[in-house]
Image (tube, rainbow, N blue to C red; front, side, top):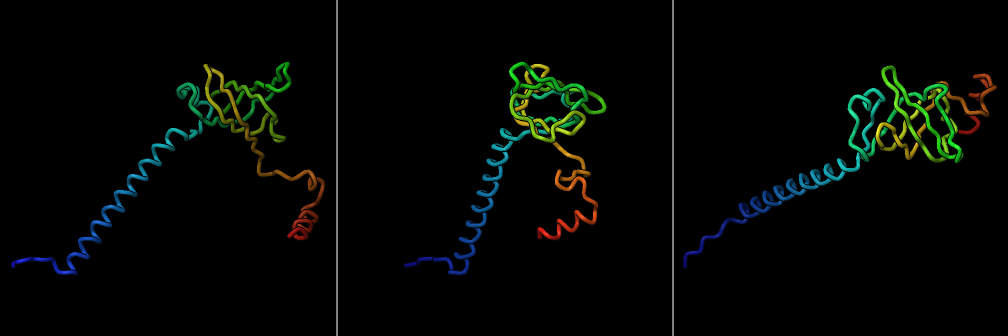
Length: 156
């Protein structure tokens, strides 16, 4: 009887190699699957000039960021829908939004609108208002710097 068996050390190395190859293949597969799923759900960020130059396909979820043009906010008769323009230094885009606007949403302020293009109008599902770096809560607006620091240190 001539049976040739592999030494136990070679067999263990072979099993380890197979396990490593399988783990790497599984990680690559999971990464590709995640990338494919995210590509369908990702909301890309556009500036008004980019949106005008190369608009996304109709219905694709995107974010539009820029400044709310002064004098452009118009409330519709239903009292819930507003139309306004978002602009940058090169272009302006008409936006329609139905819903409650954030407190910081005012003319001349920064805004990020999440939604999609319908023709030449951007239809926003959500508005995110930005404040500048000089933002101060209402309660602290009339305080001096020393008073504000005292209030902050008391709350810690």
